[in-house]
Length: 241
Image (tube, rainbow, N blue to C red):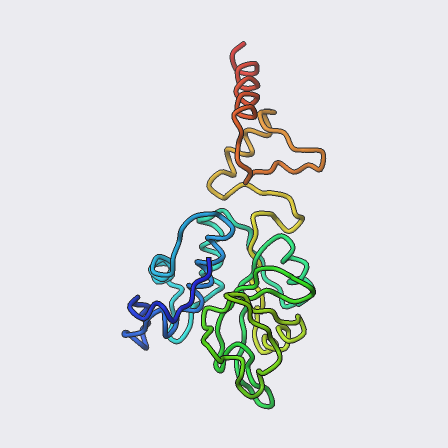
């Protein structure tokens, strides 16, 4: 689901320095959070909910969203993997199996910000024909016709396509540059959500759940009835002797 912050002028997103701020005026980060959570979990979590969540978590600061805090909170509460990197090659590799929130830096001496004048967050949703697929919550008609931006991206519906080198340039004054989200850990194997870690450890130690030939327990997969039946029988055989 794509969310454009310009559609949320009526959703409050106040900060200490701007009590009348809305998602439209300062909510690129929460729109990105909504897109990542919805895409990776299948849950409906629109910007009005993510904005309230960010404020309760203490991630709303004057003029910005504290993405380090927001990212760690949503990863924990929605059972996602999160790590950060400043390496464009790590980002590109990750996009074959996950999404990322990109921290772009805006205008600076000798450079016109590609996605923002003053900095914002955007979502990287994949790779196509060597270009990074971007969902830009701050997109508006004619945005990329500005001098310094023209010809650097292509737009097709909600998707924006940009070469990795331009994305790397647009983030070089930020750190972390890239917040990587997924349902897998950094080795590419599924991990249980934080709230299920103790139960998952118990189930594997007792042989109720076993991994595949690659050692992946596929914790985020949907459980079929036949798999449930196997687990129940293992439980019966082990604990009802």
